[in-house]
Image (cartoon, rainbow, N blue to C red):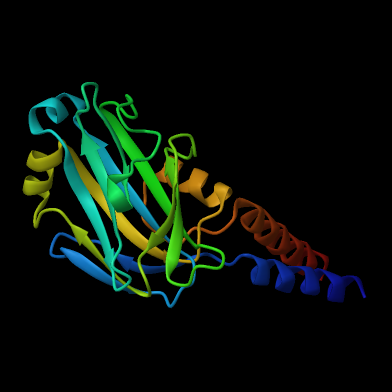
Length: 219
């Protein structure tokens, strides 16, 4: 009975250790990606290194554009704004609360955009904005993107991106489903675009492996 319980625990741990699926990962030859989500939640993760001093010279530059068959547009933008910063620009040129704020400085950073279908508004999305793991810079709601969404990167090479917006992209990924806070924290720490299991699931998996090891020792 004890051996059966240990084996069952290990099986459960493997089942719980599920990662959010990475659907698309940017590479240097990509300039756009088609996202056919049929009104379901998804997320976009971006790892980059900024050169804050370049922003004032370059002005407002969109690094990512999201356009959809619903006629809406969302932009993830670096801007000078008198101070420098970054933000989301949605329909009717509406900005997040990060507008004209010193939202990031020189160094490595991560951004996660969680796209959640707007309740009762088919084809519209609420976009939840995380910078370095924190949801502290405002969100945009009810963006009419539809189901077939195109994500376009602003330039065709690393050199162009760095020259245009004062930062260098280290990676961009599209995930099936929204990232949880624990997964966003893990991404902010690693700066790696990959499928990220929950830390709690990893702990359970480790416990299961330990149990199997004890079982073998007992045998």
